[in-house]
Length: 338
Image (cartoon, rainbow, N blue to C red):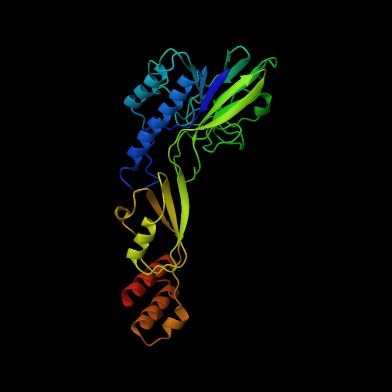
C-alpha cells in the first residue's frame, strides 16, 4: 500500500506577518499552488493509492471559492487515488465550511469529529477531524483495533502537549499516526507543505510512505523550492546607512528568502527602506544595542555633554521612560555628531 501524507498547507493564508513587502503574500500563495501541484504530479507518476490530508488544508477565515475549485480540480487529476481529509483547527467542518457546502470529487472522503474507520486490506485507517476551532476531547481512547492489520490514525492535533487542539494520549495503540498541526517534520508530522514563517526553517514538503507485511517505509519529498533562512549581520563596524545597504545587498541569498538579524553595537540608523535591499531579504530585525559612554560625555563641556547631562536628569525625574531615553539619546547623538 502506497500513500502520501501532507498537512498544514493553509491555502489563502495572508502571509502578512513574515514580511513588510507588499507582494510577498501573493508570491507565496502562488508558490503554495506550485508545491501542491508538485505533490499531485508525484502521486500520479508513482501510482500512489492514498492521499492523507491531515488538517489545515486551507484557512477558514480567508479561503476563496476559487481556491477550493483549484484544490478540487487537482484532486480530479488523480481519480484512482482515494483522498482522506481530516479537518484541522484552521479548516474545521463547521456549518459554513466548504467541507459541508461544496460538491467534492468522488474520490474524496472527509472525516468528521466522530471516529470512522476504512478497511484498506492490509491496513485500516481510523480518521477524525475538527468540527470547531478547538477540540478538547476525542473518541479514540477505547477503539477496538484489529491488530491483525496495520492500523493508521489520520488526524490533526497535538501528540506532545495536553492542549485544546486535540491532544492524543494513546498514539502508541496505532502502528502509525499520520498527523498535522505542528509545522516541523518528525516521525509523525509531515510539517507544513511550504514554509509559512521564519520559525519554519529548513526544507518543506510531504511524506511518501509504503506499508508491506506490516512494515512501514517513509521518505520525505521536498515540495517548496525555497527555504526561509534566518541569518545575522554584525554592524558594529558599519558607520553609514549606505554601507549597511551595501552589506545587506552582498548577502548571497540564491532563491531562498531571508530574515536578517542585525546585531552588535549600532552606529547608524537601521530603519532601512526595503526597496533599497535585494528582494530575497524580506525581513530585517534590529537586535543591536546603542552604546555611549554616558559618564564621560555628561562631564564634557560640550553641546553633547550638555545634552546627555540634561537627558539623564529627565530619566531620573521620570519625565521619560527607559525606552524613550534610549531613542532620544541615539537620535541626539547622531544629530550632534554629524
